[in-house]
Image 1 (cartoon, rainbow, N blue to C red):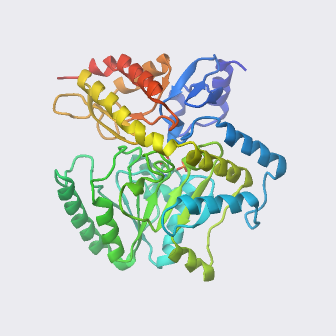
Image 2 (cartoon, protein in one colour):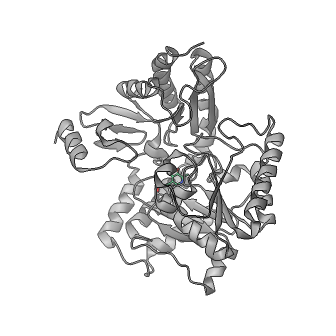
Image 3 (cartoon, rainbow, N blue to C red):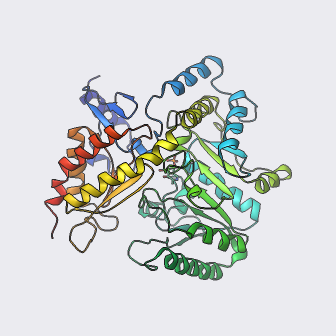
Length: 439
Ligand SMILES: Cc1ncc(COP(=O)(O)O)c(C=O)c1O
């Protein structure tokens, strides 16, 4: 098929996520390798968002591809009640990389299902029903994960299930809890404490957080915040659930993003980087006290494809490659390189306001004036933003935007030169948003 036929048939017979179907114009993707992919015409693109922040170790990693092929020759699938070698090996491997006593895992097909399981397990373990999460958050597109989600993607599923309570993040959209890390932490924790009183701590099972926030800001919390949050929750017997789906597996320069603080979550949700997107897989990790609870009580969750042998084989190879090929350290090393490029762009382009990077988890925030007002407001898209994204694509750089943010999340195997090339392309195109800067 040629590119035109592919796009025409995909649009005619398949549905694209989160979009009015008449308004989309998808890019063809034909093959991929490392930080690059190629469209059907043979044009090469730098993947500056690791697709959906998931291809952490790069596309078509040869060891992962080989592991998938070898597993396919031996055993593609057996039901989730069976014990298989890939299941034994990935469980053990995850117990080695996960912190403290998180050493038992339930396998799902992705991040949303993992959060679904975490909601259920937190409720079963505590005997409580309410769940706290942030307004600035995304936890997945299934029904329960949508109720956890604070951002506007939730609205289409409302009225949802009862028992989900949203709270403001330490950095809400407009409101300010303070200026220093200490002040923000103190005021946000005081506010959360009051919410907990209003909801009745004896009713609250868990609070879900993205320890370094993903699509809602690519933002690390204030220093000391996660420790204070953990103390508050634990003082009421409320579980801390870390959604590491996007920020895990080296993205932030540590194996898991909560490891930038001195906390251990009670439940940990993983997906994306777990296989580096080579096959769908999620894993819910739990601390020993929770795992032990289910020695005598039924672990009331299940999926036909839980512990699918092919995905587990991909997971083993991807985690081993992440560990053995130094991608976590590379992400940590590249943070300053990326931030230096961002600083240079901000100095040169008036439309670049603030910028952030934790490891290779980064974003540029576009502003419309010297006061720093965002170029696109809450849940809006200024027309110059998609124009910028299209211009980047034409030059061979793929990335995504969210409101006024331009995401900078390349595969963790990127080197300094490739980062330089990527930021040069951004530099070449930012005149588009500079043109609508109001001064
Ligand atoms: C933090 C977070 N949690 C959960 C999910 C949902 O994962 P999935 O799309 O694999 O269901 C995502 C997806 O982007 C995410 O960023």
